[in-house]
Length: 185
Image (cartoon, rainbow, N blue to C red; front, side, top):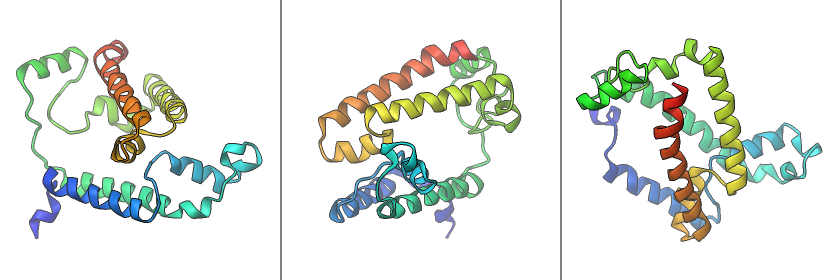
């Protein structure tokens, strides 16, 4: 039974994602995490103020259940499936991370310099959260969906706009990681 509490390998998780996608296609649904925000805003009455939020949100309850499951799954993964061992990093990666201000690179999956509550409540941490949230919100709306929607559903449907969006997501991620984040840290 111990295998349940270990991270599952790609050859188990990948087919499970494919099974979920096939089920969604079979029932005529599409997958995307960002649509949950639209649903929650519609439930809260945002349709009174913007046409974008005027739709039958009751048909999206299944997607909200998915979001709750993702949050619950993240909690379970963090508290029960994350090994306590240090992450194996190369000496060059450790030196580069220390140069960016990380005091103990490789000792945890979520470095406290970025993910601790204390760090997030600093002016710099709050600015990063707000700016990141605005960029993700704008990008999701501009691209017509989020990374999961385009990369999983859109590419599964062989949609060219999703391929273009996913390429843009990767380029943006690389720029953020190698250019912008070192300037911020």
